[in-house]
Image 1 (tube, one colour):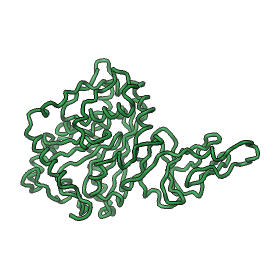
Image 2 (cartoon, rainbow, N blue to C red):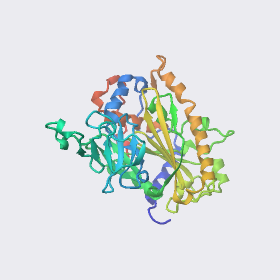
Image 3 (cartoon, rainbow, N blue to C red):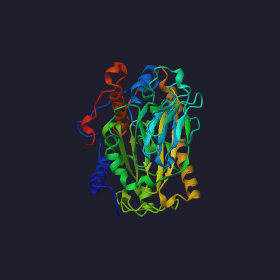
Image 4 (cartoon, rainbow, N blue to C red):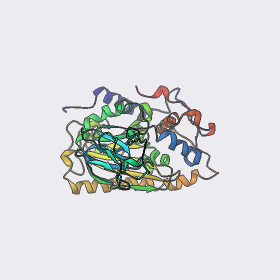
Length: 420
């Protein structure tokens, strides 16, 4: 291995944790017992509105790729937060985000989903804004607006930063710095050199369920040997799954391969970390640690990103609410540079992943309907599902616990179990 490799101390700790998980007879001594998660968190319109007002307006959200802005003046629209936003590379090369709303009468300053502009010019009355800093340059018939101060009518700027080749936005005007928010996730992801990744496919879904019902399905492996059964065998051994609860609501999950997969791969044991041949023929990235080849290694970044990483490229899954009972799942498949031209292999890989997604989402609408039933009052959570509780704790902290009706809160129980 060369370059930005995974810290060896972390690998040793993850290995020890998987051995402990395999051998345990219960949760660790003193680990908190979770009350049921109130079903109203998934069904209550008031709770949904609290999320809209205080969660989605105060979180770093991945909006797209820096490579989608190849030239100064390149832009793309981002509307997933129920606000019209434009992400643009200014004349100085810096990526910024502005409201895509003319400050005259509210018409969009650009209408095409992506493109390149010299300036941002509203098509309704031709008010024109600078593409770099959003200030108002020109007003049609300015003589008819006595007292107008153009300096006060620039496009509102949204907090924006880049990391890993992705563009992130935050509606909070003074958020925690992105790199501090990402923390150890960003450090562990260095090994993939994702700045060089390229998009090779998408698989977007619309699911009739609350967004938390959807994302929680990808934050535990308690279900794996049942939903993803392959003739009585599964690829993973959920008994050895170790979960890292990261600051700010993010988390890591590493799951060892099952016995039959370990044996078929020629591994001496589940922790015989080695660079295994890829079934689709992809070449690995040389900086990626062998543990990524021989486990299921996945992250969740608060509030709405899940990515099961792999040495050759991986899906990037974003979950956006479209009402209390509807979720847009945006799945982007990114390839490392070594494999970007392998179109047939990627088509097969995306199809295989889509099958797993199909198996997961088959339950989501029935689960959501059950949660709306008066017969279902709450969700019991096991030690294996502690990432779900961690997510919900962070949701409450971001909203502001005092704003949430007492019967809909979750207790803050996991502070002592969050990795520094």
